[in-house]
Image (cartoon, rainbow over all chains, first blue to last red; front, side, top):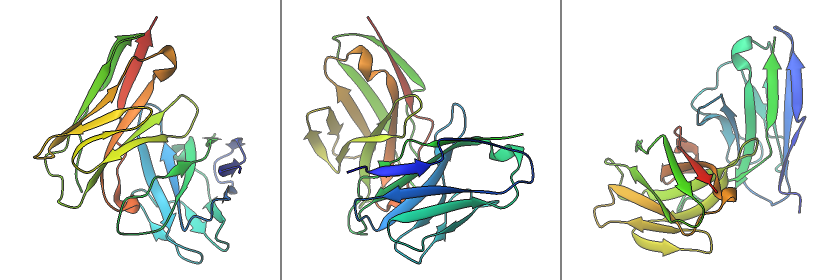
Length: 115
Length: 109
């Protein structure tokens, strides 16, 4: 059981370039999330998905797009990277019920630098 | 959304008990209280969750008073490996939860 994995671990982009971060989970979780964490800050929710084929905006969605074509994968895209998007990005997943809070399982993170 | 307030940082020594208190005055009736731990360069890890009274697992205890306006995470006999940031979250739906800045716990030998 790999849990939640993220690809790549590190990336350096130039302003205006695009890239896609991949998150994969092997726990058959319905819900998946993308967070960003800036130095000394907590995590902020970018986008999330409550099931295959669905996505929704979180707290800071601007400049990002997501897709959930397969249940086990959640992709985060940056169409035109900006220095303000320099951050550590965490993916998470959880079981999907709305009746009770479900533990989120986090990936190891992707450290992105935009020059 | 229920906002939480917790100390920015705490220091302790190995072997001591550490109590981190979180205030959440506007907690809703069906909100849960959840704590996560985050080590440097890693994603957060779930520690414990509760709704009321006391919850204990192999890692920590969570104390919640009757009014539920605060909660206390208790770490018994901390070690150097407990040095981390601890987040208190209040809510029910995972898409509505807010990770604040957390409490940075430093354990000294």
